[in-house]
Image (cartoon, rainbow, N blue to C red; front, side, top):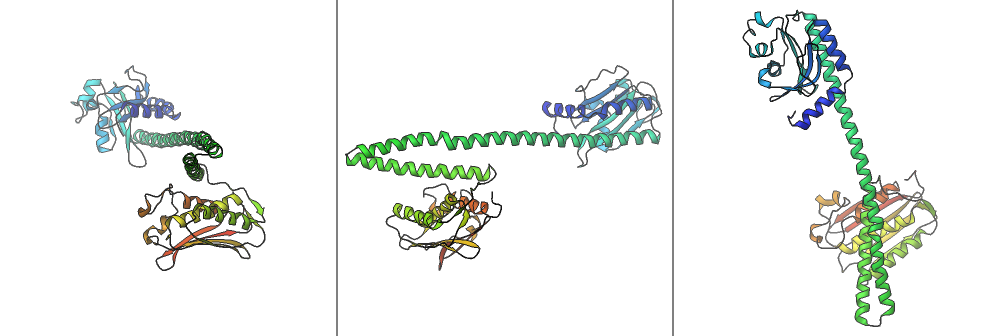
Amino acid sequence: MGDTPEEIARDVKAIGRIDAVPAVLKVLCQTTGMGFAAVARVTEGTWTACAVEDQIQFGLLPGGQLAIETTICTEVRNSRTPIVIDQASTNPLYCDHLTPRLYSIESYVSVPIVLSNGDYFGNLCAIDSRPAQVTEPRIVSMFLLFAELIALQLENERKRELAQTALLDERAAGELREQFIAILGHDLRNPLAAIAGCGQILQRKSTDPGLISVAQRIDRSVRRMSGLIDDVLDFAKARLGGGIVVNLAAVGDLDRALVAVVHELQDAHPDRTIMSRVEIVGQVECDEARIQQIVSNLLANALTHGSPLKPVVFSALTSAHELVLTVSNEGDPIPPDSIDRVMLPFWRRSISANREGLGLGLYICAQIVQAHKGRIGVASTSEAGTTFTVHLPLRAMNCA
C-alpha cells in the first residue's frame, strides 16, 4: 500500500463509501464512553484518518494526518496485535510513552484492520482524555469484530471499484474498436479508391507505353493495399469485434466460385502452375465469399512459400456430410516447432520475412473456418511437402 496522495485519497474515499462505518464508530463511543473513534489508514510512513467520530473536539477530519512516529498505531501495525489501555498515567508500559503525553490520552484502544490476503490496511482505534474500562474481553472482542467487518466491506468496495473500472475500460475499448474499424473501412478505402480511379483513367486514355506501365503498377499496388486493409479489418473483427461474422446461404454452385478463385490466382502468377480438382455435389450451406477467401489465402500462401519449380495442388471435394478443401505445395517444410503457430496472427517464417503481407492470411482462414463450425489443420514434411486441410459441414450448425 503506497503513500502517494492519490493512493491515500482513494482509500479515504473507499472507507467513506462504506455505509456501516459511521454507525460502527458511534457504537464504539457509546459502548466504551470514549469521545473519539476513527478508522485510520496506517503505513510505515503515514497515519491518515479515513472516518472519524469526534465528540471531544480532538480536531481530526477524514483525510487528516498525524505524524506516524507520534502514534501507538504503528506499534499495533508492527505486532499485528491490539493495544488496549484503561488509564495510561498508571500503566507501567505507557505512563511515560510519548503518545499519551503528547495527545493527553488516558484510555486507548487500537486493533489492526487486516485484509483477507494479509495486507495491512490500518487501525480501528478510540481515545479519550478520561480513563475507561476498555480492557474487558467483551470490549476488545467488539473492536476486533468491527475491524473484521470493516476489512470485509473495504475488500467488497475495492472489488466494486475494480469492476466499475473494468466496465469503463471495456466501454472505452469498445469505442476505440469501433473507431478503428471505421477508419479501416472508410477513411483508408476512400483515398485508395481515388488512386485506383486515377490509374484506371490513365490506362484507358493514355497511349504512352510508359504511362500505361505506371498505371498498371498503380493498379497492382492498389490491389495489394486493398488486400492488406481487408486482412487487417478481418483481424480487427476477429480479435476485437467478437469474431468474423459469416452470412450463411445454401450455395448450389460453389464449385464455380472456387474455380474462379483458382483462375484469379493463376492469372496473378502466370509463371506458376496450379493443379485443381473441384467436385462439389449438391448444396453447401456457407458464406460463399468467405469460402473463396479461405481458398484464396491458402493458395496465396502456397504460392509464396512453395517451390517455384513445383505445382500447387488444390482440391475441393464433398462427402456425405462435409466439404473438404486441401491445398498442397512442395518446398521447405514448416519447422516442427512452428507448426502450432502458423495460424497465429502476424506469424511468418523467418526466411520469408522480406515477403509481402502482414502474416494474417492463415489466421483469417482459421477464424472463417471456426465461424463455420469447421476445423483446419496442417501437415508439413520435407518428403510430402506442406498440406493445409479444411473440413466444413455441408449443413450449417448455428454458425454466427
